[in-house]
Length: 149
Image 1 (cartoon, one colour):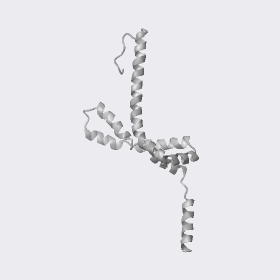
Image 2: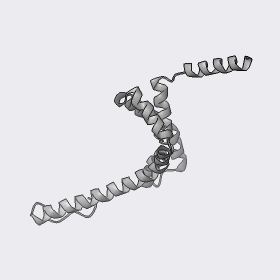
Image 3: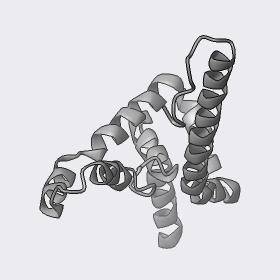
Image 4: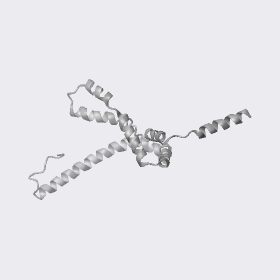
């Protein structure tokens, strides 16, 4: 009898717990991989500057990296979820990201984003070159600018 009472109390305590919308959004941000650390956003961002300024010391970059607050971006992303999704939709997204397909999406998203960025850069470069060639052909430009300009 004591076990039944304990289980009943335990179940009522669990069912009484309800996440707030903000807690659900925090879980969604974490589950969905939007934590950006997984994608290495901060590191890639700094690497771009390292490539541009190769004479700058590693100590400088380490200091800068400590000052960059990726949580600010994560929090702003959470605010966007709150703005554009109802609590019921957040619940559905949480279910999705906990599902096998959602987990697969999370796992593949960094590579998809990386390849998507590369595809976007290549497309943009091709399009710029195409427009410049047409402008030259029609006499609007004297000679086409060097590729990538």
